[in-house]
Length: 137
Figure 1 (tube, rainbow, N blue to C red):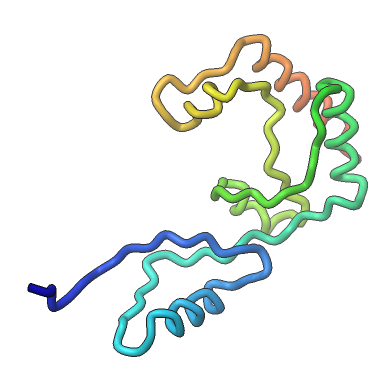
Figure 2 (cartoon, rainbow, N blue to C red):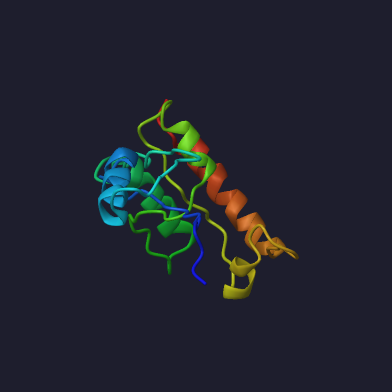
């Protein structure tokens, strides 16, 4: 016997350069007529923060001084972070964490036994202190 109805839930992340409406148009064209598409929550992608000016250079410099083996590189953050709420206040919102973590520690982020070493925490605090001290007035 074939079911007379079906329902699917899809969690989509809208790529930089796309819009929710554009993705909805694509989905509706793909599934065809007669299929109802309903949006439960709508979030446009965050704007891309500039990486070719002094703000990102400051992040690079401080990181290079405190973590010389790290290479800060602009990329698109695939997860949703609280940073998206600040893009209306500032056009330079960078998702960055200066904490050394093992692969196992990264796997515990927002999970049971989330942890970071004390020395790694203190090095990250030092990074943030330097950033605040060196921000332009």
